[in-house]
Image (cartoon, rainbow, N blue to C red; front, side):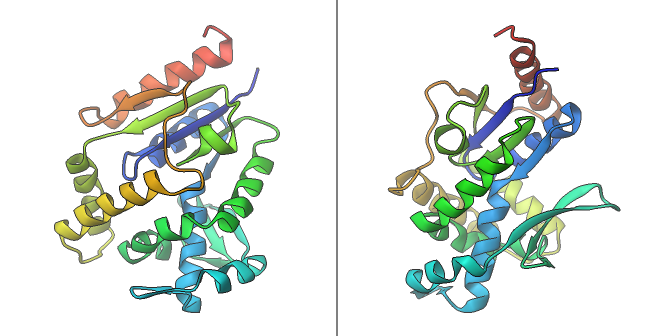
Length: 231
């Protein structure tokens, strides 16, 4: 059966990773969480003291990129791919609000994007891949057979993110989440290098009022049509 590349872009907390994982599982494709790759570099920068509330040493981070290795390993107990930073499992650490605060500034650095885009393109050479992020359909795989652009209202996204973090035991305020989502939207859409934008041939899906099941089957149908050559 023909294999394709499925590129899913969109704003933060629109459920890109959730539907990307569902599609990969159903189709037997490889799923790559590019956001996790940027989060891992952000965590590294925080650990090294390159970035904090009042400090951002871009030069030192860029010079240190060669020492950062990001890999994905399958957790046999959960059946999920987890992120490893230089051989250490950091899956839980990279999902915190603290990391979320700094991930967008880190993602604006051209050298960081170049390093990760090269890795991502290498992963997609054989096709049969689902990748989500901010610039997958515009930069990483501009020739992807299926491009999805996901959006939802700010309130919807903030509520989803708040619930996600509370469920993991993190103590945060809803206002902090709203502020973080707003800030990430601004940085993601206004950065000079590979800003978040909808590819001309992407299909936009606003899931503000869609449940996960309806969203999955909507996108699955699009994928199956592309695989079969119907569209």
